[in-house]
Length: 167
Ligand SMILES: Nc1nc2c(ncn2[C@@H]2O[C@H](COP(=O)(O)OP(=O)(O)OP(=O)(O)O)[C@@H](O)[C@H]2O)c(=O)[nH]1
Image (tube, rainbow, N blue to C red):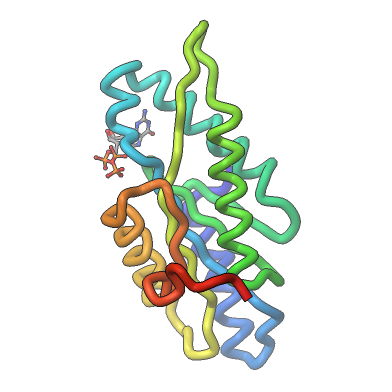
């Protein structure tokens, strides 16, 4: 799987193309962080933790589908760049991935190791010039997802959208 450096190169290319007047469709950036991963390490050991990270990486690459590029951003954090995808669609794909991880937990002998994640997703906007600013927005949504109880994917304005019927 791609690493943080590769992800920043992809994102830099998207931002430069937009800067040069070649926006190239709708882009979304997501940051995912596994929930309570320390407990997995504490309970099963680091090697099992590593195995679970590989399991999640595999599901990420298999499940996200066309136009989504995933990277291990660091530790138990993954980043995804969605191309030609709307914000709601990116959220829906990540929620599907969460469900999929819930339905197919990693097996360890007779045990099943559950795993969930929190995530933030933002659109790359016309005003975006620097990856660092964009990633700060995504990170703060990820933080809000953790604060709100984990196991959820949040997009900007999620508080206002809560309870509103889908269009
Ligand atoms: N096995 C393994 N553990 C890792 C790796 N990278 C980071 N970790 C562990 O991931 C854990 C992250 O812990 P925290 O930042 O407290 O987060 P958390 O337990 O997932 O809790 P929340 O993020 O708040 O839901 C630490 O125990 C790290 O040691 C890795 O490559 N392999």
